[in-house]
Length: 181
Image (tube, rainbow, N blue to C red; front, side):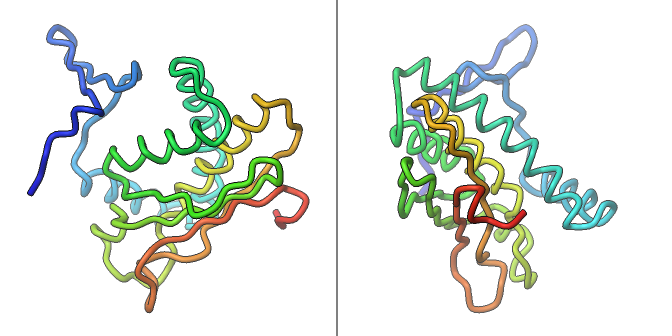
């Protein structure tokens, strides 16, 4: 059974057609449309190059989003990260669960269930959700910077439900000093 999610308001400007959620303009497109475009760029650039581009873009976007949402809702620390995971989970990417987080150490573990990529592509044999890695590091770094920490992180995907024998995706966030670039 599908239910509406009143906690995720979508406003549509009747004059412009612009969709807005959390005061941010949104695009609403079918999952297959987005993923087909994603795969086309991946094939043109190669997975490694595309992943690096997405990492930096996602990092910057997550930082900005967390900064604005923390200010808007008066959130700080882990509450910002959990709010981010909730909102990502409500937007069709999959369900993001924080398994562990330690802002002082600059570490986190995130599990991804019901991945939009896996739903669309199936068991393709490689980690298909690399697009999300920059999101987690950008969120962690913004939250830590807001608390006065100079520590910065790097995130990586360690498993995907698109790989044989795996049922969920997993991501690790570690301080830059311990994660090879």
